[in-house]
Length: 143
Image (cartoon, rainbow, N blue to C red):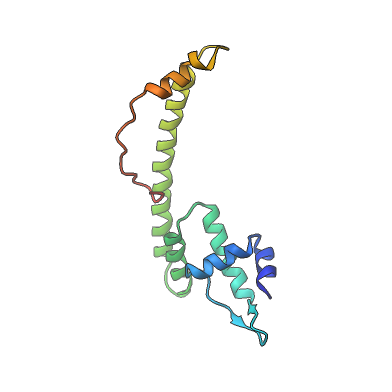
């Protein structure tokens, strides 16, 4: 199949297919006599796998690690479990960060009471005067 059909079947764009090829996640396809890329069912299965991992917010490194394990189908799945356990830990940290963000936003929202001029808005005043915290290094895979 050509790249457009592969992208359509995997529900992504042609650019996404090319990007995953360039990133080394999707193997380069063979070429037809007229030099068109020719993809097979294995490309489609791998692309769907990648897309599903990305839908779960996995990084390219996590996807790459899983693909390396998938490419060794006879080995045990302990490595797969470790990748998922690490990803779950990253999600837990991100949830904690998002809860803190929500608390800040709720507190900020409570600083404005009713309809008034933007100049007098407590949210605007707070945003203009609040001290920003020192940015902590994030402990998640998001960076």
